[in-house]
Image (cartoon, helix red, strand yellow):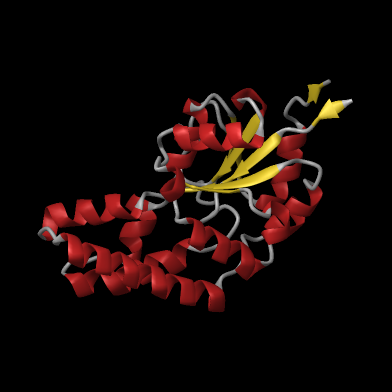
Length: 222
């Protein structure tokens, strides 16, 4: 018999089409705190990056916030993002069918976002039944991509060695983390004109290609 591979999915930009919403929310909230920001900056430079890292980079250019204002900034951003996700969030095109086709595989969401945001995203697009409580947040585990530790902790919790895990991620930080973790990596490269898939990762450009890409990877025979 064969043991299916364990699939570790990123959330933003991989399962759900949240990145433009996040870019717009940041562009609305950050300037209120004296940190000029545009959606284009997020999409071109900071996609998939930890929010605090973005804030600190902006503070270096525009002046530091004190701890209280930094905390208020994140609270305001998270609250607005949740409202917009619940009202507007859509799955990545083709991902619902891809998940259904991959039903035999154990799956988890592994994200740089807070667990509440991951849960909200899965509920908003109707994906919760695919993942249930298998949601691994960098904020909970205190390790952020591109550090491979986030994927390694998720794999251990799922009961799989890294070699039997497949990372599916759209962002450079996630692809790098998966490769460094010693996992097989499928890069959902939705912007092939602007992004290059690193050596060692498998490139696909649409979620409809995902089931075939997973099927080409070697199953573990037991």
